[in-house]
Image (cartoon, rainbow, N blue to C red; front, side, top):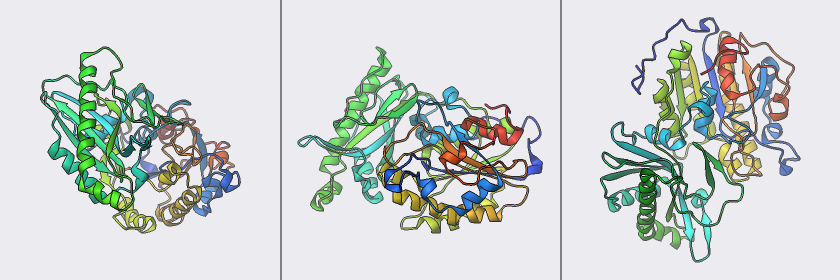
Length: 444
């Protein structure tokens, strides 16, 4: 029985018991575009990746459209697609998955959840730093959350829960047993616009935070927009007065004094269990709460896995590898964040270094440790081009090596090279079916 209550026992025998286990390694935001600073190469092409290139020579490659040509994926929708669930069909927004992943979602009554950024806003100068320069320390973020939780009330029988993670990121959920709430509201984060359930990044966002408004003349949406604006104002007052920001100002750093809200949703995806669909068990390793929410919905085991405070990425890779290899699941999915932030920050050389560290300290040792019956896939959940600084809908490279995968003519791992691959999948949602059943296999 899955955490969501769905029966995930297999309805038919496992699809590929003779192939051993399947390991899916996802390099967050690894895909990119040619970068002038790298001589017109992408970070994958510029990086020294002997182990990824060896996989390309021994296996088969593909360039995968993750969702659609006009929809930049997030890590959760990218993971959903790579596990065979088409986000166009199933996705209901990042907020609900994040809220479920943090145990903020209430099955009874009304819930609406959002992704938030801890931002810095100076109305006198008109400067909005949407990510507080990425330098908000974990202890300071926790203190801000605790102060907001203790001092802000919304009334109307509406409660909120707030958490922070990853320096500038957070999750907000509003719940009520009596007041109808709706995810049909706009973002206050000017960096994203809503396209259905998808949050689409803006190339040149406005320099001021937006006001939350309902998309339609609906009482629940109007009430939710009012509550969001009330919460944003009240939490900003608390953050402005906080000792955390007094210390930041004294040190010459911008205060974390505003929460930007986006990606609202009031409905969880309805997803068939992974084992029910495939006959295989699934274990997921990641650090994004939305991935934990996805794991709960599809009956997967989730392990929160990220570098400890002060731990280097190579040390983390050496630590997590034995856990992955000892995991008893048929399919092991691991999400590695290393390349993403350098892409957001426009640091191509750091992105190259992050890719090289993964190649040397993770991909190589993992490939060496697998048995001849195992299959290894390396791909990305989305592209984060350095010269854009935001996610893009560009295709991502993928390579698979295993007993059921015929080698093609590709000899290196990268965006251009993958275009010549013969893996048999053009979309991320087709990848798992192609590996389990061959090209044209069914997908959910």
